[in-house]
Amino acid sequence: MKKENKILIITFFILISLFLISSPGFLNITGKFLINIKAVYEKASISISVVDNIPPNITTIASSVTSSSATITWNTNELANSTVYYGITTATTSTLGLASLTTSHSITLSSLSSSTLYYYNVSSCDNAGNCNTSSQYNFTTSAAGGGGGGGGTGAVVKEKIPDFTVDKDLIKVVLKQGETQKEFLEIENTGETELDITIDLENLRDFVIFSGGVSEYSFKLKVGEKQIVQLIFDISKDQKPGIYPGKLIIKGDGLQTVVTTIIEIESEKPLFDIEVNILEEFKEVIAGEGLLAEITLYNPKGIRLADVDVEYIVKDIDGTIIINEHEAVAVETRTSFIKRFTIPSSLKPGSYIFYAKVTYNGVVGSSSSLFEVVEKPHVETPAQTEKYYYVVYIIIAIITFFGISMSYQHKKLKEITESIKKVRAEDLIKAKKIKYKGGE
View: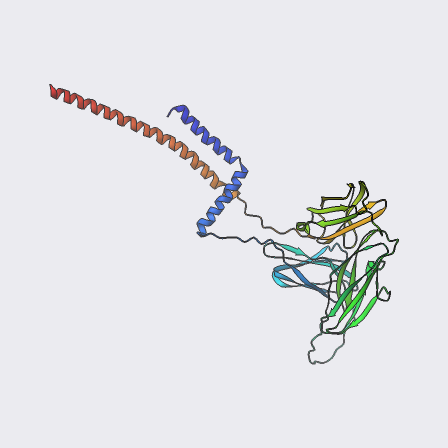
């Protein structure tokens, strides 16, 4: 082989080596490849990994309170850890959790203030790092009690546990100005003692009354007894169109259940209508990521092509506005499009409302949908492949050495071949000379 060819081959392998060393992507891929080879080599088996990306399902959330503590309980459909976010505001700035995995969860919050309203969310993450966070609930600690007296010993009496259930955790009504609608709640005493039930309308008093026109409602409920409560949603004709979220608070002997209530009010005779549909994969979003919703506008009155004002609002269950955007849209008969909104990264896990309204000549049509902001799933970071880079360097060195060795072997083989040919030629010449002399 010519000297120039040798130099070319060596230069080629050097360039390839330099290229590989300077390519992080190649090193990363090669490192992962080598890890897999190492695993197969060590275990001499092939395994199939099933990816779990489904978070635990949280059910039967309940609270049991005293004047200074509260025990929060819930269930999950798979083994998961336990976390409670709580506080005296909806921001829930305090956290208490247990890392142990279970399906029956119980967290006791201590050192609470008496006669104080606390808000809380529960959260559970399974072993694969899939997390689910509930909507927000609340409870009120009882008033501080007095001390006890002395006495002798006696029989231990088992404490009777109070409890009740409500058949709904969400009520959503869509009404026009001047309309009335009835909804019903079924409350059942599932505990071991008679309950005094009170229903508090909180910030819904302008829209809801009970049967008989009263704004407060309380009753006794015996063990195992059920009672159906009628709620009358009554919207005045001059009520401003919009969305009004609120809570129905059902209390009984230190227990409390919250029914999220959403009242959507439209103009009495809307000229345009709107429909909101949050895409299925965005029903649960992580704070800081995007929310996609399909918006459809209708022109049922047959008005010619017109520009309408469309307002988009995201609110929390307390009515605080998170996002508020406007735009003008041209509508002739029907138009549909996808809108994207970025959820603020500071948003707490919980239930939120996406509300859109279309306005034309002061007349409003509206639509809304609920979605959940959830915690970012914990994903274990794969082991870094940098520690396997040395293996890649060795491979590169072997390739380079192999190339040079092949070149050298090729040269030696050629030299040997030439030597053999030369020896054979000399032997042939000698043989011919001997024969020639013998012939004389």
